[in-house]
Image (cartoon, rainbow, N blue to C red):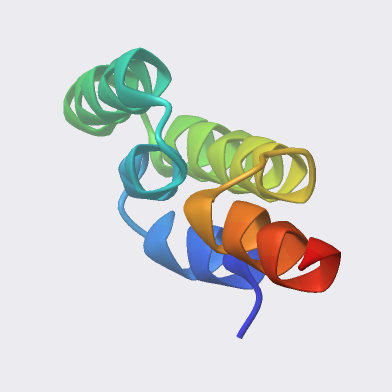
Length: 78
């Protein structure tokens, strides 16, 4: 499974996909925002924040170099 797919699946909990990708501050901000919206808003607000978080995690997953990518590149050079 690709990392962008894992990030989207983990984003069922807002911010968890970002934490998986290594974006600690962004992930924590999404978690705090998700909790605040869940407590103080209607269902529409929660669905909006949740969907934006999933889209953002997908985009970050497409453009993030992780350790597995570096190992793959190092293996192809040798």
